[in-house]
Length: 82
Image (cartoon, rainbow, N blue to C red; front, top):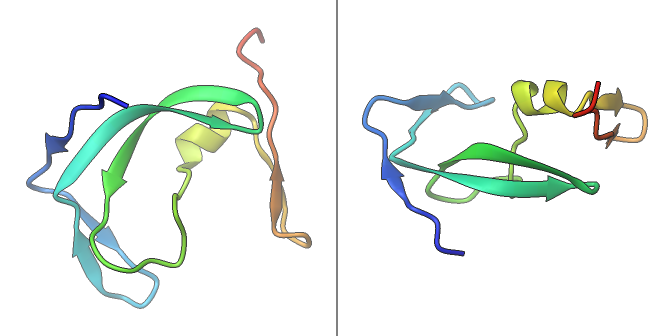
């Protein structure tokens, strides 16, 4: 993909179990979800995780995502022209 891996020295992630993981690197990449393309910053986590990607609230806000928690799903729409 030709993405540049950047170093990050002072960022940590607080996990649901109370532990902290250091985020050593990040990359800015185009991500397409449900047909909506956005450039987002991806912080890389070493080790096993329960998911492949976490979409941040600012990303969900930018696509005006609507959560359907009963179905464990989001409805995503492209509102760039609003």
